[in-house]
Image (cartoon, rainbow, N blue to C red; front, side, top):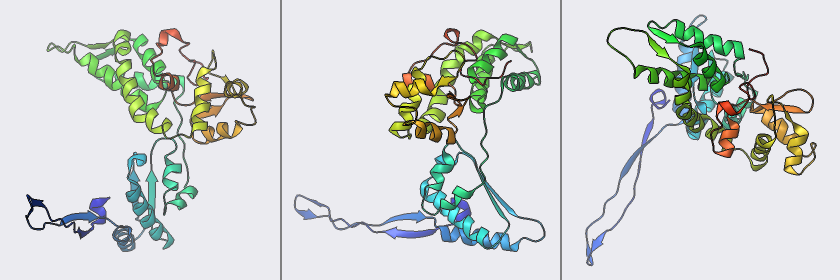
Length: 306
């Protein structure tokens, strides 16, 4: 965005009169910083869109929008809004973690994003997850993966795309350690997948769970924590049990339930029940790894049969 917007240089002068043993050492000052404004970016977009002919347009895509600085997001939104109000052919697509839209829309100058079309992506179903892993590895020459390893990759990732990516990456890296020069097949075993799970989980926690769960209000965080404490054999958690854990009535905590559903952190699963949409939330709140062997493999996953 900085390269697109250009920028204006401004000098901020900081004066000082240092001395040593009562003797003045003179004055020094001058720090040059570069600022990027909405005006320069909007001028660029308006000029570019206005120069296009036919059915052409400008498409701006930004990934990891939750990591973009607030002032940059404000400048981008303001510039895009100016172009759109002029009826110019501009489309803005932002992608990010759950809650990113609400975060950006809360910035001054970005409130129009509340009216943006919102496409919420969910985790893959069981069959889709296993088929995705099979498809990738079967297209890789020299690679051989056990069915048990595919199943474990699916159970560990629970169909969450980012966690699928991490688990697959670390499994491949682990298998590369056994590479030989004789071009023999490279095998990925269930034990290899089991070995990389703590590493993948730690990175998933740092890059996904912490950015999503840390900023939550005390009420929302308490509701999720109470969900973790309720026993569940199939992943369905009673809202009545959650309310009792919090010492309140279901009606009193219904607002937390609704907000968590809106943020795509949980989903309703029948009357009076909810379930997590993010994998491994319990590990995050309890700060420990729960081995897959100690829980139903599909407990936290979607309710679809494999």
